[in-house]
Image (tube, rainbow, N blue to C red; front, side, top):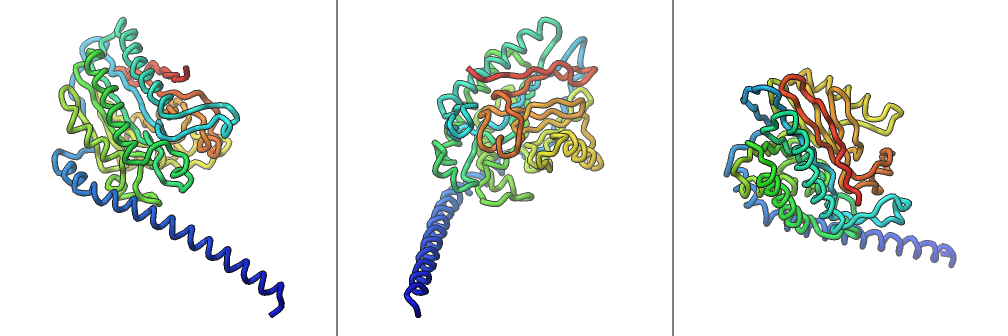
Length: 336
């Protein structure tokens, strides 16, 4: 064998060894994650058995006079994800401290908007729709390097902040009742690849919702189901809630409109809904038949990769009138 051939073979062998070593390290980390999740399995199963699991709810109250339900949509927080301004052309900065400030700002905005609108109508209930991707998780290898917290640490962080948000609204919002429909996102999963029928079983966020459901009970109805869709009937109208990753969108010229309209038409063949609410796409957009929520994290590498139009971090608040359905809609802007 010639010397150059031996050098080439040695180089190939070293590259192969490095690749194998990297794969072994990945497998080791995945196994550590699986071990961590298995230790929580008993808790998850106990939570599931502790109460009714539902993905549908009907609000039976008959409206008297000018009445509306307030609806606040919370999704795509990605709280433990760190956004360095240099990676997004100085369009945004994000970390745990900024996340907490934005959550507090969203809480105050929900209360303030409700207070203003009560000048002209009765608003007895709040629908606090929590639609997933509150966390970023470890679904990509690079996230293990960049995230400020591990998935389990993130759940504890979120539990404290969500408890505060809900309890503040319970105390200061003067609502007769609060409905909290929940959807799991695609980022909070415990598996590398997405699941379908067992998605909730492999979701950190589902565990988070169930823990909160046990903790916060008075004046609150939780809808923590096992299906992709959650249905809520208010004033004789049907609202379908979901994370939004079930939509198939590849950044076409028409934006979200065409794939969303196609999906709704298909879903309505099985069970009709008058309004769809979803997140996932980090894009705030409204249509007579659907609402796409913005994000708390704001511009990040994901939003740039899916060609989402740049927009400031925001969530959505709207009124659902007893006679007319969705009426006023507001952007809750969260920048300093």
